[in-house]
Image (cartoon, rainbow, N blue to C red; front, side, top):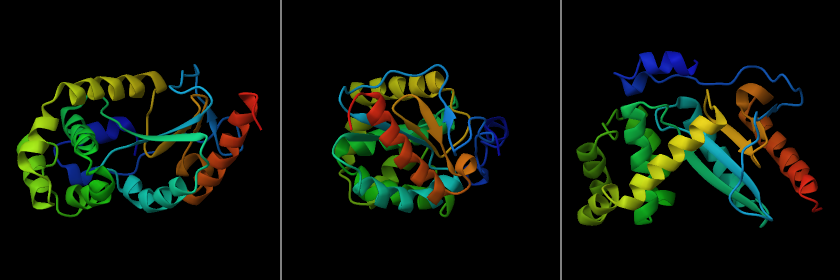
Length: 212
């Protein structure tokens, strides 16, 4: 399901379906980011995962991704970027992600957020729904709401929205490597294949940076 179809179904988060990019025009299980995007840390290979909590494919990909990230070499910087596409419901889910990162609970609750949205159909896109769920999961209520309403999370929202626009992300889950390359299950053929392609792209980016 493409972005336009998802945005037609936002009245029911559980209806968010499969998202993917077109077949790779470049071959080799990847596409070129056009134009290339700047990365944040020199001397590192940056890998971004674009996702959202209502996407079933993101949920299926997450356990594989988690294992892969644990094995990444020290010169690879991995970050997750929730997409918003300018939609309030997706923005609410993205804000939950950033809030959990701010409170230090993201690693523990990130996988559970997929279940809460897709299986339990909880309204985590709203402040009240997100706070109620987080408190039940052991997050301090005041700590959560202070982070949720904080300037830092507000700036974080602007940042991820800009990344989504700049990278022209049309489907999730998608990996962006070093601001130059895209891969995903739909491009590479499977989630497992996408991770193998990402490894190859990391090595390629390292060489392009003049490092071995």
